Length: 233
Image (cartoon, rainbow, N blue to C red):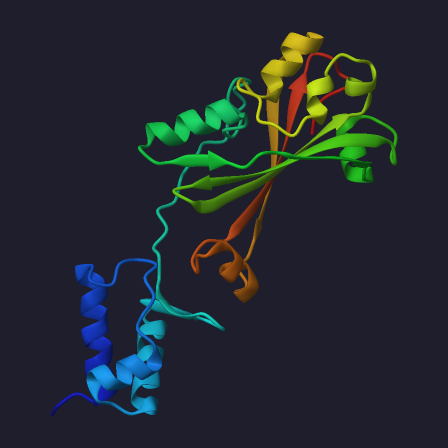
């Protein structure tokens, strides 16, 4: 018995995906173009797309169209108490470790803000709740796919004392903030602690990230420093 028309169309499109004719991330032809190409009805095309969606071959993004799912090649890093590494904590270590796996790493320019610290962060920094802190927020990508969101907090007196003014400058530090604090203030990192949370993908986050498969991650890290009253979170 011949397969239903929608199944034949789904199989044909799936083969095009598997052979690379429709590469990962590529947009499928519009519904009208598919109808004309396969001489099929609207419902038949929609059933074929539903079939491919159920197989995880394509995804439909409202207002944009239907796209071939981009398979994610996970980047695995090892949690460690090594003070020089952390969880790829510094920009230099992050770029180096990703490059060693023959992948492309990129980080955005930090967004720097002065804000009142939350009770949770105040506890980690060992300062009074509500005190002002400097936050440096950065997005990191691997092969142009969102990998992490990282926000680091520093006590305000690091800057007001005149010892680490560059914390307020929205720029990437070549050797990383940890190295800068050691050079500027004599504060040496002796340990590393990570708090990690993952955000489940939503339709909105999928559209904003350009990937239907990749959850967005949030990471906050706290090096343990030799000055016990001023660890960074």
